[in-house]
Length: 185
View 1 (cartoon, rainbow, N blue to C red):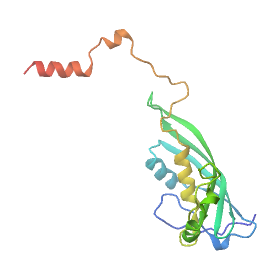
View 2: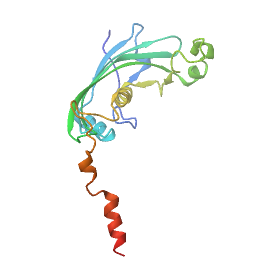
View 3: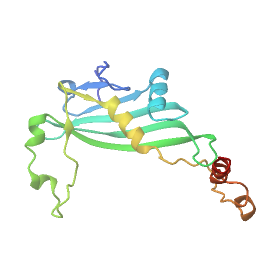
């Protein structure tokens, strides 16, 4: 696989690494990207994580048919989440396999429905994402798959929900406090 001649420039996303489709050789393009400390901090804030210690993705970009490119690879990240039960931070690894097609807007509309349907009335693959200005932003793709790989209700290993016991339930509850306030008037 040849070395990447990818361009990195701002596109309005937190993590950006743009690949010019005209520079993708016939045999495809392999590349590895990783987020710097500032980008990891910005992504952690955007995804409400305590921290992102590592974020790296290996990609292979290859032309698939006329004006359609496939990006496949693996995202690996080490993140610190907050447990929804104990509110304690804990580290976890996120590993996501990536397989996404990209196409020019005209090619996107020109994909016949029969190609997308697998005889069951459901698409075999998602329609291609748009190639913008001749570029594919694999950094934004990595950030998207990181978000998809996060547990929306993270639990620290060993943390368990402990319901109130009968004795604890008999203690004063928030509405009991409110009732006392209204009884004083």
